[in-house]
Length: 204
Ligand code: DX5
Ligand code: ZN
Image (cartoon, rainbow, N blue to C red; front, side):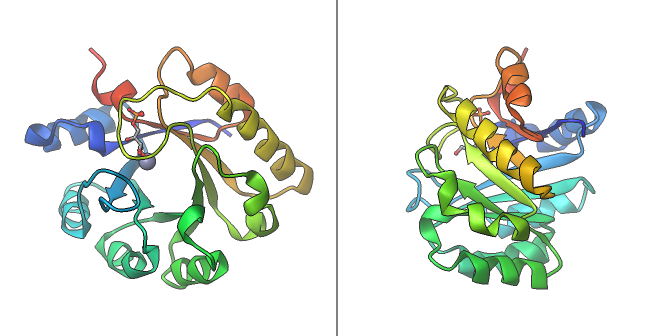
């Protein structure tokens, strides 16, 4: 499968959001990554359901919604209704991940779980068959423009090995600090989707 780039709209120029979307379309992008931050799970606040709904009016790309919120359960239905295609919640805030996955799927959306850099793959290996995507954070979540954490490469390789061995369909997405220089290493390790904030929008 070809590796996809999913630009994180958080790093876009908000004064010119329409032309930023056109830039993505022109670059052949198929998926946009939305970073939803609540100022509680992470030390930053971004945008909400209305922002997504408005972007949806001018854009039919795949909307990949990364919920960095303490209570994902509250936000699954509103984001599904606003136009999300994939909804990802964090393992660190979900003691009942199967319940959330079921909820996302009942709304006919793809379901994904995100792991912070230090959260082990073993916390989700039993539920991989239920997941469309696993998002491995390669920075501590909260801000774009941080540096890639190198130990995550091994984590990508280990997760890929489990997926291949069991013939699962789960895609591996990697998020944080990805740029032209390190992207080939991340792809070689086994990533299917690369989220790029600064690496896409802040490039000259
Ligand atoms: C970090 C976010 C990322 C971030 C990526 O909390 O989840 O999606 O915007 O931006 P870069 O590629 O600049 O690290
Ligand atoms: Zn993200």
